[in-house]
Image 1 (cartoon, rainbow, N blue to C red):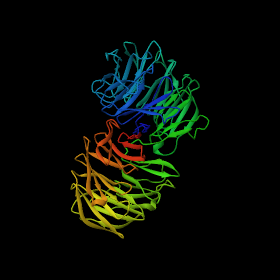
Image 2: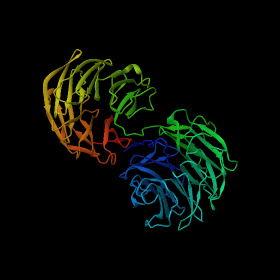
Image 3: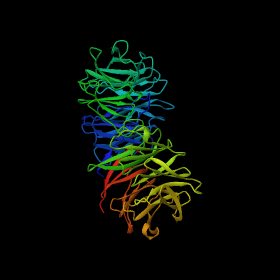
Image 4: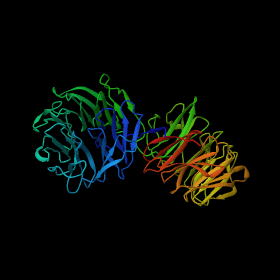
Length: 591
């Protein structure tokens, strides 16, 4: 595999996002769906994805030794796994809570772990990393715990912050409740010890940050006078030298504090949109990172508070479709998801984009569950309102050919478009159409149906005429496509079979291809017209050879635990895949 294009963190309004940092300062960690994503802080394009959780992962933290990562999920399970090997071997697995794990902390010797979150009988637990046996009781809260931290010096201390508006302070090991800190009037979202252990801070939905003595738990003071932020505070992170701190707030700012002077040195204004609310932050070496509700990761610039040094953008929801466009000898990959896409300005589709292709007029053509087809000029890269074509029912598939032709397959209808306008609609088909393709010659249309047949239509002027010819396949057609030279038509069906027909021979069956264990949902021809790739619900991608059905290349577990939703070839030896894990991966295929 050549590249992983990692997804952004999955964000939820009003819910803090914990970022993990590695002790050497090279990588940072976050979660999306069932994945833990490790990214290089200097070059975030270098990424690794851990996909072994069976439930959505909420938080992941490096051990102070740097050799292990502990990740906690929505079911209360914690997995401790190796960071040094590419395989990320599982070392231990425990279920310390009966509900969602929201935060994790390690002791400095990497031997004990505290976890906090939701549960029926308790909201936190502290245990030995190698046996899972308890090293104390973290009691004292009446509602779920959002945040936990451990002092990195002896004597160890633990602090927790809860939805019951209090923080609790513990001494140990074995850890015992010492006192309740009830200065806040709203949910306590984040608690963090300074790296030198002298103090800890609590940040709350009430907009306040309090500073306490790290050894005794006594209140020292608050930051910013009456309030630190105009909105709720979701995260705080100390500077490596323990003299400063950053805080992330729903007021769409991040503030940099001089903790000794209790004043803000810098205020970073991150925008005016709801999506600009700041839900997480991390101070790692010289890097100051924050996460917006949009999922964007911002690298803050102390010298220019209104302009981040860089912002990492990408997908945070599952990717449904993908297409490639070549321009000036460079290849661009476009991928579709729900709502706004950051590479285009203007208003995008309001619902999931289900299929996308490019046409010869330099347009990206997309169809969506919002019942529209949209033509977006790739030169301008903005969604233009004029080029939206409303459909009578939900479009499922779109195909294009030379001469400005497009074909939309909708629920119960097939629609021919020319130069972005509807010119012909076929309904009362007598079967439910699933997917369509226009022959590269622009004369024939193939439509795959739920009736386990492919129906052929000829394009005559601006009309579609039923040829009366159908080809039977083994199941409901899930995708079909003509080879680029128009010689073959390939189809995949829900009975797990791929079938190739020879166009010039009256669409006779050239071959059938078996291998998928679950239904294939996407198909793409290689530019060489000799090979095609299929991806399925079995998380497998196969590359097939037209002349030899036994010859196949298998990419197993191409997206672990998530089925492949779209495929596209960049050249004869490079295949790009996407999936519901929101990542895009590029593979080198050698025959």
